Amino acid sequence: MARQRKAEIMIAGEQLRLRLHGGKLIKDRRYHLRTYPNCFVAQELVDWLLSHKVAADRAMAVCLMQHLMDHDIIHHVCDKRPVFKDAKLLYRFRKDDGTFPFNTEVKIFMRGQRLYEHLIGDKNSILQLREEHGVAYQRSFPGYQLIDWLLRNGEAESRRQGVELCSALQEHGIIQHVSKKHDFFDSGLLYQFCINFRRRRCLSELLNEKEQDDDEGVAALTQEDHHTDSPFVEHRSLPQEGNSAFQSVASSKDLKQVTSGRRGSLNSLELDSAGYAPLAHVSQISVVRCNPKSVLKRNFTCEELLAPGAPFIKKVLTVIGDALGWGFVVRGMAPCYMQAVDPGSPAAAAGVKVRQFVCQVNGQCVLYLDYRTITRLVMTGTRTVVLEVMEPLE
Image 1 (cartoon, rainbow, N blue to C red):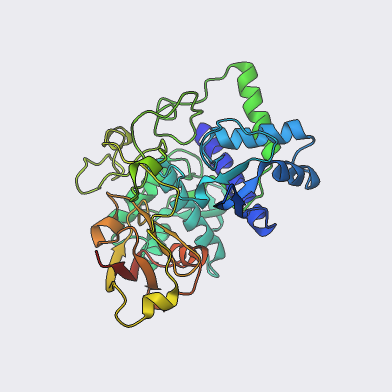
Image 2: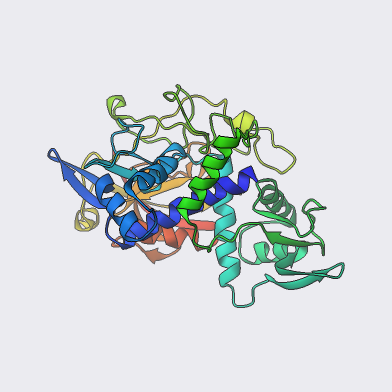
């Protein structure tokens, strides 16, 4: 239940973010001669929440946003204010600046969400009404059919790897046996997704659940949930010198620390029974910091990149994603560039580096596309991503 509630908060936050982008409340804003990309004004957001009947009054709207802030979904653009205020202050969704704490738990959750979207959108989806022991189950699937689907769509390279992925999804509360009696097996046993990722979440319901738990004194969080790497822990003190998800290049005075778990190399860490690095091991890796600002020393136009004699070298890199994804963050409005690369990820192993400009994705020219479009191309493609990048000559 605790895992599913965390998932509900993440989905609610992401659905709100997409609605705000669609309503043009999230945009680049200028304050004191400085431009802050992809942010919103707290006062305007509260007005929007009231006009769209998301909140009954301004106090409730502030409580809702504070709930998202406590769960590291939004933050003040300069990280100077731990409290959400109904004022002309700038805040930003962490997913919009690459500072969202992508620890192992979150990455597996996002992988599960992506698989769910693919399976639901498939014309011949394996999610169907099926029967087991005389009981019918909506949108269920046999374990072996999901493994077959993963192999056909490049999401797994072998049946063993597919079983490891599905076991991790089950362990994190994303899929389950229909009667909750079995672990995941490559067999005819029926399984279901525990979460309907497409259902629109009501933020006020999530807040009511939180208040109910507070009133009853329910300690719903497990030991793992209290781990400092979890993005769902309500941090009541300043982040300690510890872990973060990605590494970017900038002067140390510009760095903003983000508390999260850092992904470890699956080749170098001891794996657990599901085939993934245990959180306890991942959390002990040394300090890495994440910088939400652009890592570019200066901006370049597409014409400058393509000009004869430009100080760039072109490279073709093949990134084979693992069960946690690929491990890089793309930013920019054309040309796009690598804002951050997870040091222990497939991207880092393939030679992806910060400040590289993205020219092609799987043979398609993306030089004139924005980062959202490029991200969508990668996320909806196969597990193997072929990138053509332009790297600045040092």
